[in-house]
Image 1: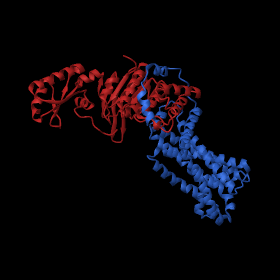
Image 2 (image 1 turned 135 degrees about the vertical axis):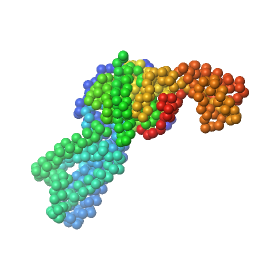
Image 3 (image 1 turned 30 degrees about the vertical axis):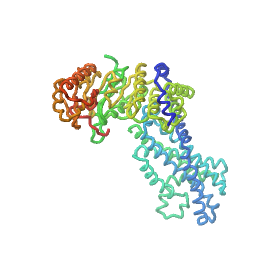
Image 4 (image 1 turned 90 degrees about the vertical axis):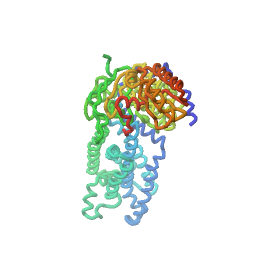
Length: 280
Length: 324
């Protein structure tokens, strides 16, 4: 590290120069909740810029999921992969994005070990903005994953009846729900001791939620007791809503269900997250 | 009575079975450097974290410039900054990005935040490294970006938690110079350290804490005169002369002489009435007496009292090496 050593040896703190930066200027007013959240969002973007490899899981993973399930089940379940894709695509999009939400918890957990978290917690800012910053960065990741899946779907023959508006509407609903759902992971990220345990809990929650749903097959084909679970599963309602939007026939009942669930998720897990954040 | 930057009474923090901070009373005057001296696990960091609103006290009270650290946390936060033991900046981001981020979070608009960042980088000799990720910085540079981040809001009170631990001597001196300049501009600095030398050089007053309790408080001079000004370490050529040397030193210094594990070495504490010059004089007289007696000395050194010696003197037990 030759440059590092050079700078260290030549630096001598000068009273005049340090004096100018220490001169107490007028302190700016504290930033608004919105401004602080957006600034943390900017931080999340910078981290993506510096470590672009982390985008692998929002590009390659969704691509793999789509291809795998389309060709694995397509022939058996719907006669042909293209036929099946019309049913599967909205569901596999929901599955992939909801799976990616768990990285929010991992990120939070990695950060709290570091001193920078202490710095943020000693700032006089709106407390939830730190957490919202993570989620803003994640929304970018979710958007990328959804776009990848939509494009792959279109190439493979997915033809949404709702057109572009329907597809975009479906993605927006998915992003909104994922934002709300991620608060579960910010909570676990703050609560658990290691990244590994965050991953472990995430899989424990996500596997049943995504598989025991209407993503892959019609719930009507399942035994009655399983249908009870599947129909109560928020992922089922989310998938039904996204499907209805992409098909151009919005199901208002399902949409309301998803929006109410999102608000509840934020209210419950947002509150728990902030309690943990303040106590840490 | 000058204004107080920090006042605590009966401050307590418990982790499981450990009382990390156990009824701590501190009164830190504003506008000076206040040193908190203690070994690892003494409760220094825990105390600082409570004062910086990062930890909730389990008992007692603490105010910073008259604001309660729990009930008026935001008022405290707008007046303080903390530089922790580990870099309190984001290592994956560049130096400039870190400072701009903080500037924005403190309410500066983007252009002002950029300008402030550039000024700070310049003042801390980091302009060339501005565009590099902090993880590529040397230890001294990290400390500097950390302190730069801490004074971005020109805090009224700056907490420096072991700012020189792990730094090479040159970087340590830079940090000391920076601290002096910061204080000269009216910021109160609370500095924790394990080194008596550091507290002695920088602090106007020192609190010595051990096992979460305050065991001594005063100016460096007061503290040292209670401990002794230092110790003289002597290495003899011939181990057989050690009993004689012990007697001569004990007489000349009027102090207890300790026999080291090494059969040719001895150590004697010197009082010097708290003054280094007097201590040096006493030590040279003692060495002259050894020479007169015909005892050959291979090597000797005069050391400031170490933290261990301070602890021995104040608590009758050595500084314990418990984890924090």
